[in-house]
Image 1 (cartoon, helix red, strand yellow):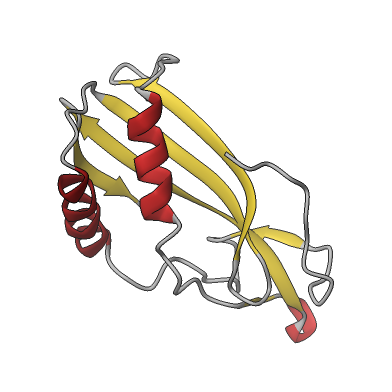
Image 2: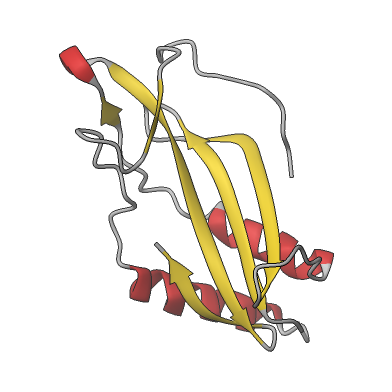
Length: 134
């Protein structure tokens, strides 16, 4: 993933977690909706994915609701032990993540625009997305 350290000059240097008090910046569509979209997205790729476990993307949303290219990828098996999924599967999940463009703009104390750290986890079972967290 692109891990360049870029930031939006219009945003302060303050970072919060998406669930922090007052930030309330969870993605506006339900996990069930995202699950169905991700399943359709991967099905359209028509590739034979394998593996069970979790692929989690951790990233920054700037104060204008745009995902920055700083993305951390964490991969574990079903027992939460480090695991490497097929690179194409991870790349396709990331391609799906980049289609999400309704991230909320967040404000901190004194109504200051802030950046926030968000994540999306894909629970995989036999190469298919079984759930999306949160």
